[in-house]
Length: 289
Image (cartoon, rainbow, N blue to C red; front, side, top):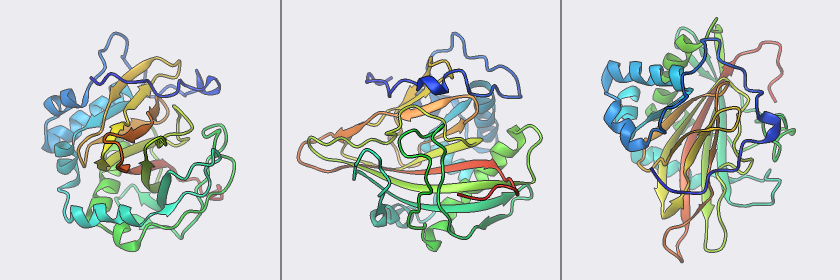
């Protein structure tokens, strides 16, 4: 396990407020933190791998999924180079309340139905209340849209389908449809200027389920993912290092954060590219944004 500075502690206003899963208490007391290397050894591929991921989410509130198992869940990672190259064409996030210019992103929203139909929605703003994002929340944030080629790319569609297949059965009284948001993120760092993957600190996203998949990690030191219980106890600590490494998260049961990145080799740019997908119940009475 990496030795590192833990991500910013769980904000006081979120402690104890995370709704306990309707599936019952998670049996986490006394469990050792699972590393990515351990996950590689423990998670089988194929249908058994899907079951193992589901079991881990249900038991612990999250599942670490190494790249080989992600590939199995998605049915392969075709045209990966084309997919990953799209992170070189992201717009600067102009909504950083800390004044930072270290984050680039694109955004898209989808509707996913229980029968497996996934449809892209018209472009819309991303919105989080300040309850979940004290730094940047409370405003409609308009970002450049994910290109249609990436929205329709087999890796994107495979991840959306894998999320639907995993999360729908884990949800008590699952909805007829899900509101799904897709975020392409690049965090950059330079000498003397760290990049903050989660500037708001350890947090919930205010959704039901979250997927974070690493696309590229270049010249990066740190960038460690930390998982916390609602009371602030550390539950897991690991680094996504290989393209396709991922973590699947029950947003009702745990909080997550990532430590700041800096260049591994001085004089060179550091960058960490991830794809984040969130699922929440579709609310026909809710106005998006």
